[in-house]
Length: 282
Image 1 (cartoon, rainbow, N blue to C red):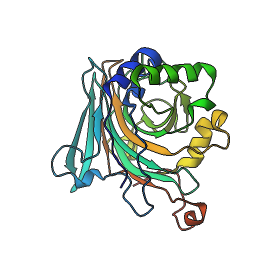
Image 2 (image 1 turned 90 degrees about the vertical axis):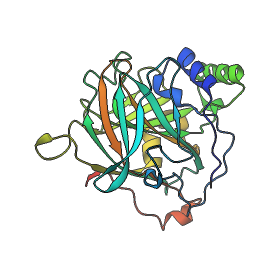
Image 3 (image 1 turned 30 degrees about the horizontal axis):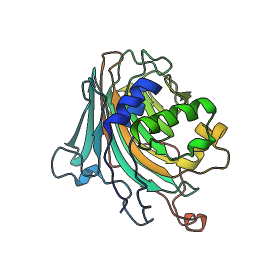
């Protein structure tokens, strides 16, 4: 199983001060965790929780002075799922890992949104909030970044003496942006966003309907970061469930099922993997 690491408060302070990107405060110190085998559970299921707290090695991360978003494992429809409640708050639930990014790499989960953050606007700093985001962190070589981006990363590493992730791709269920919209985070180019779902789901537009997703991480990564990555395929080093309403002082409520991250170490093994497909309703 991959080694698991703690979240470093100094990284949080640096991210807030230098990159000014709230969601990036989930940055981890990842001391080269070992690669997971293809037959391992890469991400620990929420359904294995013995109480209301997400099981190890899930870790909560926030910024100093912020009201924390609530993450709680609850029973819904006879199954254990993660309840995510933001109320003028900010927070991330982060799971460290290390798996290769290649054509076999897929990410699958189910989610639902009961309450959207009313004044959220992903295109502005003042409105950069959301009820439901699932982010993936990549170990892209910092020396491949622009001078300005390298300077920020170098400052972070000199200040803290630790590593910080260089790229994050966030899947968003937004209340307003159209499905399929791709955005660069309003605070930093280190975070790219894809709106997978838009508005209320279910018959007659009623909220509270579960939707299932299965994504090809390689395809999504190339669409999001192809401008800087070229043929480079960085490892996946963490996933994070995120919800925030600190900029708008609004409220959001969402739920996540177990998160299934799979990757085979070679393209030969990838032939046995299930093909990725777009999000579907369940």
